[in-house]
Length: 226
Image (cartoon, rainbow, N blue to C red; front, side, top):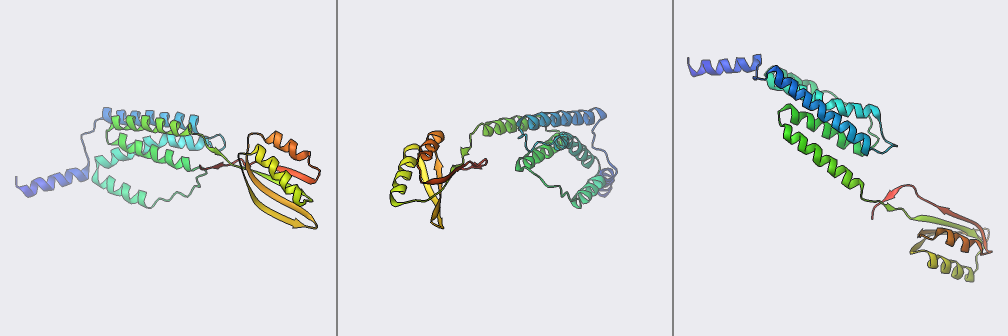
């Protein structure tokens, strides 16, 4: 048999299919992908924020490794199937909005786990899952800096009033900064950004001052960076 016949037979074999994967191997790959998907399901359920948790998305994360692993098996078994898969997947567009950026991380984790398991690198899939779990829970333990509060004061101020006001603010606040001052119809509104652990004591001292018409302390529910 000539070299040309050998090359031709190998090409025909690749086109026709057959990578030597037995039924037991295929079942084992899909079972491993299923276990990894279930693991991601429970990690997402425990670490996801209640406001953004979606059971449908979690079920999607669980089934994604199995589907991707099956695609990888099909792409290994037949050259024509692999080319068809690449062509079909390249024209698919998913336009579902992602509410939480963390969901993208879980989606990439689920897809990557399916690819890794599909090519038979089971230990790498296990190590990836363990590292991702430790990383996610470790980063979740880092506390966020509390956003500063806004003190909105409205009243009729005199020169001495500002001295008394900022004396009380300086006494109870470790940080303060005036953000705005507006005067209209002889009434002045002052907005002060503050950080304090003695908010009640500060409000009590401000309430004793007779030149205030209204005192508001606005809290921010969001997060801020250090």
